[in-house]
Image 1 (cartoon, one colour):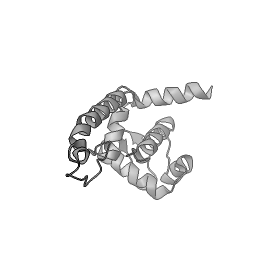
Image 2: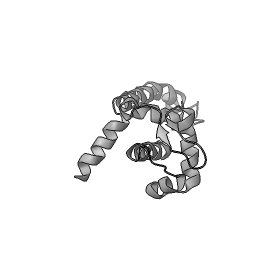
Image 3: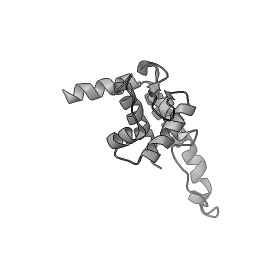
Image 4: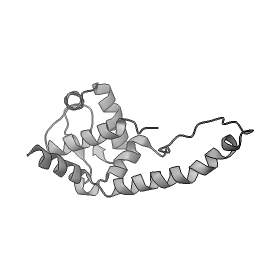
Length: 140
């Protein structure tokens, strides 16, 4: 199972808000940068607000990060939009009368959990500031 695009869109939103710090930015403007519908942006922004990463309110107000971008990890963004779901889905209903079917799920559980933990550990090492700095260095 792939991680949904909500994660990359959420990072895009937060980075754009940070880059436009102190300026009013609408969901329509963000949607134009992301290349999606403003409704999608508002839904993801709502998840980011609930997670305490973003402040925004309807109308003509300034949207801003609730913490310094150095203090917001990609892991926090990931959890805000993806929740606690597992990275890998296990196929359902394998044949219990088949040796592989009867044992494959237990055998894969540890490998899948280990991979998820490693991915999460890597996301914890990267901040929004790191993403912004990478963007700026690649643009030059």
